[in-house]
Length: 127
Image (tube, rainbow, N blue to C red):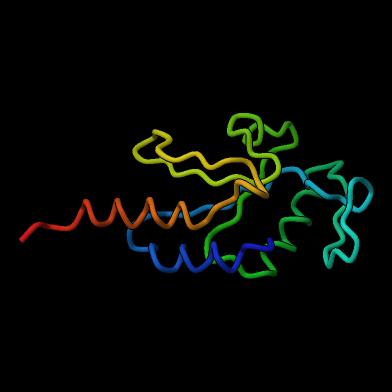
């Protein structure tokens, strides 16, 4: 959530070009696991879907600029997309056209923005 403001700027800028979605997966740094000191969020390992939904509500309280959905407890989205701990994808017509590296180091919102800008430019009529 540290880079949520950067992500929100891209969502707002390209809302007319693309649909955006956050898939909340298992917690990377739960309080009862490998936690950060001074973490403002109190999120324990998800033992049930209700736990995961409650954690996702904390994300929603931070006001993301797009919808938030929750992975199931079998972590299907996480495994299919190799998302742990965070990852950015662009899917065009059912095909992955951009797969960012795993975060936090590979979570590069600027790369998504660059891809979207190039795509938008390619869609503009030539005069």
